[in-house]
Length: 60
Image (cartoon, rainbow, N blue to C red; front, side, top):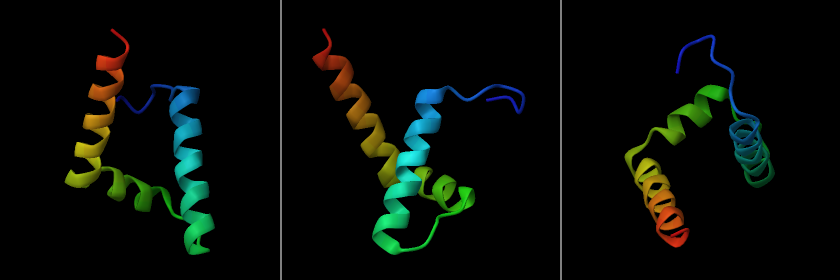
């Protein structure tokens, strides 16, 4: 993604949901770096991939 590209509101809402969840369960607001680090962990990326594949297969 280029630095000048707008982020889709759907993605912004999802990131806000993640941030809200982390704040609720830990009591501490996560930084953008915290969320970026978590999203790029192999386990999380694999879970996201599996979820997307499952959604796409279900939409046939």
